Image (cartoon, rainbow, N blue to C red):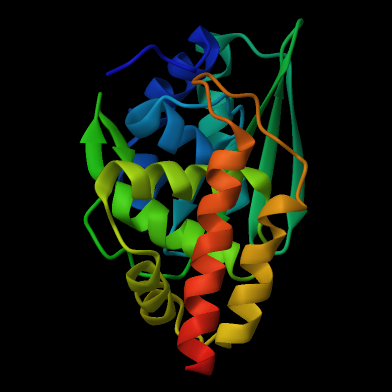
Length: 219
């Protein structure tokens, strides 16, 4: 494993959470933090995203957080709900840690990995999730993340799109996908990178993918 992107508090929080049998059974860590900490080590990511295929009981999660309060020494919990997302902000004297417990009713394609006793979404599932995000509502971090995954694993974007259709049971028009890929040069919310990466490199990759898809549509 490369150098950790997690703070000591985040590491401690994850360890304490996954020591709980309910969390260990029903949740897995995914998203940008899981991707960078356990697979790519490429950028900073602060939020801890825990997904579950079952409905989340926010009161139950809050009880678990209160149990570990003394061990990690946060002062208070602030809870927010956005549809299926349950956000818990843990307030310390000098910072706020954001942890998200989300109901995500989509079956994982591969079994999650167990790393340091923490259940981590597979790299392939993260890639498929990123592909789905890119073809619907992309951010620069999504383009960068999936570019680096594809570059590392030599996976094909078209194949990831097909797997996303199966996983999320939805069809996206190829023209719409092409339009979203062209956003690669327009989105500017760049993440804080750890590794050197020229923007033109990943942007040109996605423009080329858009051209390939367009050629398939009109041939």
